[in-house]
Image (cartoon, rainbow, N blue to C red; front, side):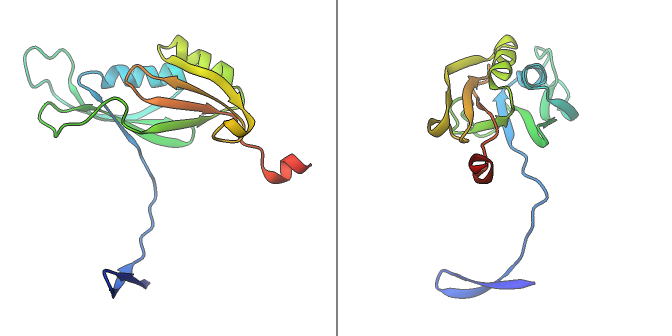
Length: 161
């Protein structure tokens, strides 16, 4: 069914659209996507569901270019890709993207990520200072992405009980 939406001063028929998934794509400096996939497996227990590669384009390339590696992580899917040499400029660090993983054992998750090569940032906080309302810590991965490791927030009903 179409719904009416006012856009630029006039009514317009807009088709309803539903999405089946949101898959964040993490772009890393080539040829580090394969290493990033291994890090996410070791640090966070990600499971690789598939990979599409472009064969070596130059003799000096040791690894194929990863167009997209699909990882299953915490009930969600993320994609990891090498940035192509000829692609438009993509900033690979400090992109403004923060990823949040939820777990009951924040400290153990941070320790595992650090042992896999991540860097813990700051202290684990709790309560109002935490983004999720529970405990939260930060880990920066070797590719510049910040991961918040959070405990599940208490629901209002749980807090009152």
